Figure 1 (cartoon, rainbow, N blue to C red):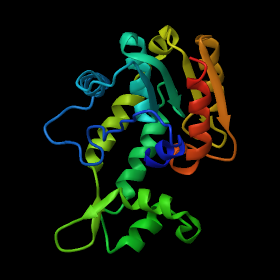
Figure 2 (tube, rainbow, N blue to C red):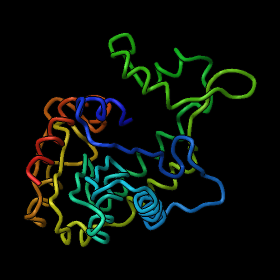
Figure 3 (cartoon, rainbow, N blue to C red):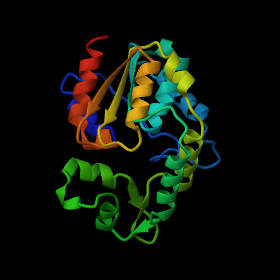
Length: 236
């Protein structure tokens, strides 16, 4: 999900680290829990176990953005800044119910790459090669042929329900690090009124909107996102 954005940071890009969160990609999902605290502990363990040389510019998108809010509020000594990409700190039952319904409707198995790609991309012939590669990376070969999901649907359902069933307004308003909030103009995940409230409750935050795109900013707008990150980091 982040490869294109990292590449767009340019030849002099900083050392960058992205990881699959629990329940996603190839990370574990059996016999574990999916509380916000679990995700936060994973992040802190990863950060503190790798000598990065200096404090980190933390960037999180969607669920990762919620965990970034908690990390910046509770462990500011580890980070130089935090960027939250297209997610808010509010509870939102309708949102997790809609997501769970969509996940329940998703096929568990696809005949081939073309079928898998078409499920996530209504017009697969119009997307870039890089976006196609990222989309197909969400699937893996399964026994008997065909493709299944990389990551666990049940884990994803648990994660989104747990995270969207509580709010993190206190954490958001307490962040004192340099903070950037980025929203996609057409996003249905970070509503405009929530973004406004976030700016009012944390005057330390800066706000940028990327026009013409929805929620999946790292996937559909990696270059504009990279530019916003570089510009923000240059002020710190």
